[in-house]
Length: 274
Image 1 (cartoon, rainbow, N blue to C red):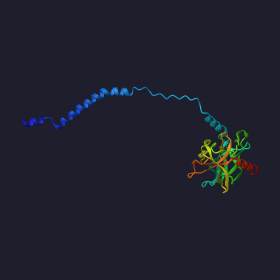
Image 2 (image 1 turned 120 degrees about the horizontal axis):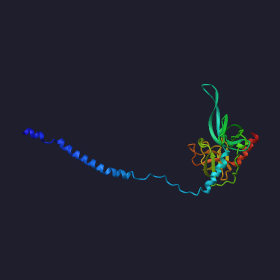
Image 3 (image 1 turned 90 degrees about the horizontal axis):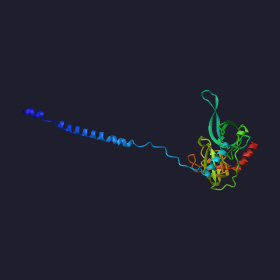
Image 4 (image 1 turned 135 degrees about the vertical axis):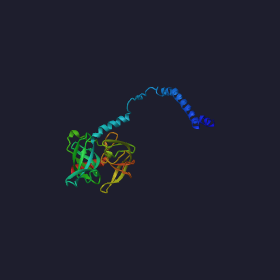
């Protein structure tokens, strides 16, 4: 009789399982009852539409002026790739490979291209890439190491050549707008805006000669801008971008350009005398 009573009494495990089962059933009922309502609320929103465009009367006048300046002057700006000859160690054949890149601009309808001397220094050849993407082999007319200027010549037809307009540098004022178009880091036809931040600076040329009257500008000048034009707000050449004052070699807020009055004189002399 004692043995029968022990076997018929519920075990402790059974007493624990029963509440768990009842709790699970209760949670199931709650989920079944409330989940459809919750899901219907979250999925009842209408699809999100694209935001409407804010109506604008157009661009500001200064933006239109700058766009026009860029469109008018960029056909005068070129990309210059200097080449050097190197012998292939495997085939022993001579081959030309790029050694550097810079900017330049069309000087006249005869195909003269102006750039910095240091852009083509040590090169055995140079390739000029025009605004339309056409490439032309260039020959060296002459150079001035003292003024870090060089003149190249390409045999492009006159209708493909748009000479840059020439301004003057003796009447420039600090605070005047300045614009640089060139090929910084190989990114061709890039426009940069700044101001003339100082005048009559001095810098040392490749020949170790001090160049006076240099223009200081905040228009960003980076590697690849060298030899490109610095323009006034009318799109006229006021300087040739030449140097950067930066510990890293990239623009740090100070760039220097050769004054156009001296550039005009030196380039004319190079073309006439070689």
